[in-house]
Amino acid sequence: MSKKVVMANDHGAVELKEEVKTFLKGAGYEVCDLGVAAEEAADYPDQAEKASKEYLKGGYEFGIVMCGTGIGISMAANKMDGIRCALPQNLFAAEMSKVHNDANFISFGGRIVYGDSVVEMVKVFMESEYEGGRHARRVEKIMNLEN
Ligand code: RB5
Image (cartoon, rainbow, N blue to C red):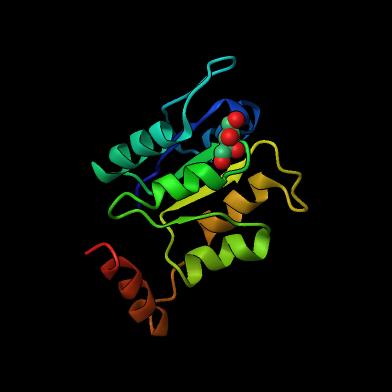
């Protein structure tokens, strides 16, 4: 299994990105951080596009995108063919986004006050496995919407 993750964020999630990146590196992941760093304003669709294109080159386990709310950047990532970006609210949703939806991207908001820690949500996402089975038909239907 690949141990590479691609990340991108706008100015609304610089600190949160750093926190998650530190966690991932500690867990042995190679992180491709496409920015942005502090004080650089960025448009979240551009960041979503960069992360998606990098992920689609192959070799990445998953991608993480972040903006102020996680909403705009997840919307943009989901416009990219091949990306299934989840926006989990809590640990349960983070787990289900992998188990049922086979998400390959997750999104978070740097200005959101979460009840569960974002690092814990990333951890449960990484540790969960897609179940397939009855979910495979539904995920396939999602992907068919790209055509
Ligand atoms: C940028 O100010 C903000 O709109 C963005 O980070 C995000 O919250 C959009 O969904």
